[in-house]
Length: 354
Image 1: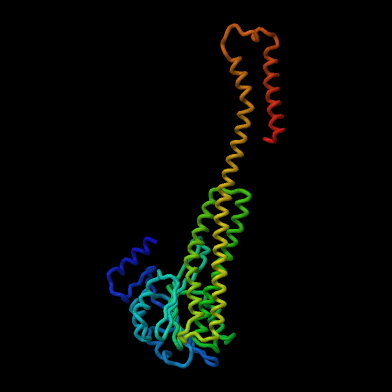
Image 2: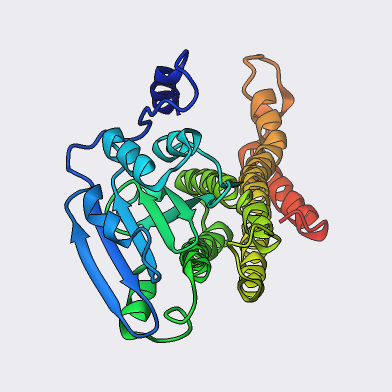
C-alpha cells in the first residue's frame, strides 16, 4: 500500500488528464491483439502498433482491441487520439488503483473492474485492473499484464458458438464482464475449501499456525470485498443505461450478471462471518485448554495440601513430641496420608471434578 501511494504521489500538482502510469514497473512492450467479426466473417491478428487498429475503426463489424500492458503512456495517448477518447478516461486507464466504476461519455462507455487470480504459489489473491471502453462498433480492453480469463469468450467467437457473433459490442462487453465475475466463483470455491479444512483443524487440534491462517483468510476476504462490492453498482448502472450503446436485449443478460455479483458478495460476507466465528472458537479453545491444565494442577495441589501439612508438622525439630516415641507412629503416619489421598479422590469423583 505504501509503495502504491508513493507512486500515486507522482501525480500531485499535474494538470487533470495528464497520463502518469501508476502500477508495477514493466520493461516488456505492450501486446495488441485485434479480433474483428460479424455473423459470417472473422479476422484475428496481432498489431505492432496503434496504426494496425485504425482500419477497423469505422468498420460495420464488431472490433475487439485488447492491449496487454499499459505502462507505455505514449501508446495509450496515441490510442486516445485515434479513437477520440477523453483525457480523464485515459488517465484512469493508466492509474491502476481505480475502484470499479462506470463513466458515461458522449459516444462511448468507460468501465473499470478488477480481474482476480488465485496464486497457487502462496501469495493468495492477485488483482489486475481491467478497463473497458464500449463504443458503437468496438470494445477496447486494457490489461496490466498478459494472461486473462477470456479464453472461453475468444473460443466462442472463433467457433461462432452462441449469440456472441450475432450480437454487437454491448454483448461482447457483457461477455467479458461475465467472464470476470464467473472467475470470482472459482476463487471463492478455493477459499471455501481452505476454510472447510481450517474448520476441521480448529475442532481437532488448533495450533498457532491456525490463527495465522485465519488472519490471512480474513485479509483476503477484505481484499475480495473491496474489489467486488462496487461492481454491483457498475453492473446495475449498465443494466439501466439509456445511452443507446447497451441494447435492450442485453439489459437482461446484465441483470443476470448483477445477480451473480450479489451472490458473490453474499458468499464473501458469509465467509467473513465464518472466519470471525472461527477466530472466537480458536480463542475459546485456547481458553478451555488452559482451564483444563489449571484444573489438573489445582486438583493435584489440593490433594497434596493435607499431605504437605502432616509432613510439615512432623518435620518440626521439637524434642518432646509424643508421637515420636510411639512404636507404630511411622506406619500410622503413612496410613493417614494414604487415607487422606483416597478420601479426596472419592470426594472429587462424587462431585464430578475428575
